[in-house]
Length: 255
Image (tube, rainbow, N blue to C red; front, side, top):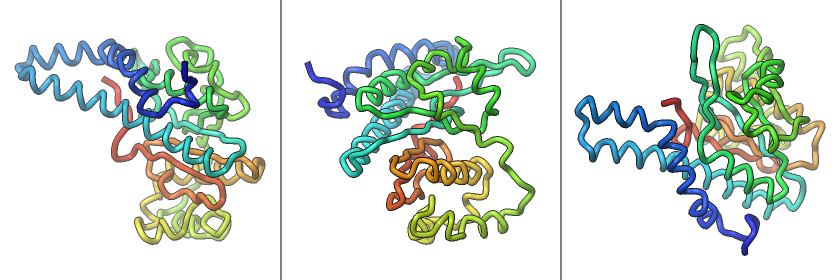
C-alpha cells in the first residue's frame, strides 16, 4: 500500500473525496434543501454542490502541490502556517458574541497527508493569541485539529496594527528588510502584479511582519503561508518564503 508521500496528489484527493462530499452534505445540506424549497431547479442545486466540492479540491490540491514543490526544492525543514477564518474554517455565531468554528471537510485528510510528509503545521491568524490557545481545547472550535499542530508555531497577528495610512504602510513594505533580496516579499512580483497599497489591509501586512520575525528565528526552515488574503502570492522564495493564496478560489465560507 502506498504511503501519502508516495501517492500522487490526485490519488490522495481521490481517496479523500467521498469523505469530503459527506462532510459538505453535513454542513450545507440544510442550505441546499432550502434552495429547493425556494424554487431553485435541481440543476442549480447540483451546480452549487459541484462548486462547493471544487473549492475543497482546489484547497487540498493546491496546498499539497505547493508542499511537494517546496520539499523537492529545499530538502530541509518545512513549516506550513494556515490562516483560520475563510481559510481552514469559518466562524458561525450561535448567540450574542458566542461562535463556533466550522472546519472545512478537506482539512483533516490534508493535515494527515502533511504530517506523513514530515511537515510542521501551525497557524497564523488574526484571532487573538489567548483566544487561540483556549480554542485548541474546545470541541466546537479548533480541538478537532489540535493533535496535528505544533503548539510552538501558533501565531496571532492581532494587535500589531498601528495607526498608519495606506501610503505609509506601502512605504514600510518597500523597505529592504521587507522586500529586499532576503526580505519576506518579492519586489519583482509586487512591481509586476500589484501596487503596494493593495496589501494595505491589516490582514495582509500584519502577517508579513510576523513572517519576517519568524524567519529570523528559523533561518533554515522553508515557510509556507496559506491564507485567503493576497500576500502569500508575493512571498519571496529566494529567502525561503512560499505561499498559497485562496483569494480568488479555494476559500471556505460558512453555510
